[in-house]
Length: 121
Length: 229
Ligand SMILES: [Zn+2]
Image (cartoon, rainbow over all chains, first blue to last red; front, side, top):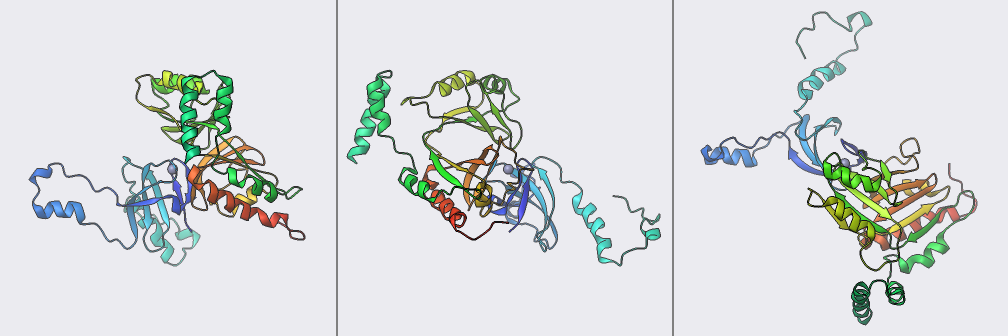
C-alpha cells in the first residue's frame, strides 16, 4: 500500500486517488492547423517513461481536486507533488542529477563538494 | 410500500401545515435512520472498561453542503453565520448556531448540526441560502445523504486504525479536527469530536456495511485475556 500526499489534504491511502495520465500535455494553440497525424499524436501519443514521470492524479475520495505528481515508474517512489497550474518544478533534471551520486561509491568528506561541479541546476 | 406512501403523504402534509405539533410528531415517528436495524447489535457489541469501545448511530443530523470560495464576498457573508469558513484540511469552525463546519476541499464545506425535530427545511439552510443570495456558489440540504456513527472509548482509535490509512494519532488529529478519508475503502468524513470520540459520516447506502464492519473490529476488545499494545 502506498501513501500519496495530496497538496490539499495530506497523506492518504492510494485507493483514494485516481490516475489521470501524463501531465503537461498542452492543448495545441491552433488545433485547426494540425494535420491528422499531429492531432492524433496530441490525443493519443504519450511517453512510456522508465523512471521519473510527471503525471496527473485526482484525489477522488477526498477533496476531488487534481494535482501533479512526479513518480518513479520503476520504484513507485513519489518524488514531488505540486498543484495543477504550477510549472513542473525542474524536478526531473534536478532530482535526476541529485540521485545519480547514490549509485556511485560514497565520497570521502573532502571530495563531497567538488568545486568542479559547474553543470548548473 | 404502503408505509412509504403514507410517510410521503404525511411529510407533505407536515410541510404544508408546519407548526402543527401533533402532526409533526406523527411524521417524525415514521422516520427510520439508515442503520436503525443495527441499533441492538451496536448495544450488544459495545464494550465497557479500560479497553472499551462504544458504537452508536446518531440519527437525523442536519447536514448542509456549501460550495463557495471562502475568500470571496459571498464566502465572508456565509462565514458570518458559521463562525468563519475553515481554510485548511482538518479545520472545523463553529458558529453561534452551534453547527460545526467541516473542511472538505478548498471550496467545499459540510455543515453538521443536531436533529432539530422539524420535518421541513431547517432554519439553518434558509439563512445560509439567504447569505448566498445570487453569489457564486451552492447551498444544499444534504441531511439524508449521510448518517452519523459515533465510535468512542479508549479503543476507538484502535478499531479505526485497522482499516483507515490516514494518520489518526493525536499528534496529527487533535480533538476538533475533521478529515475526509476512507475506512475499509468506504468514503467517510471523520470528525474527531473529543479525545476518544470519532464521529463518522458515511453515505447512507454504506451505513449497513460500515456498521457491521466496525462491529467486527470491536469484537476483540470484548475478549478476555488478550491485550492491545
Ligand atoms: Zn485531497
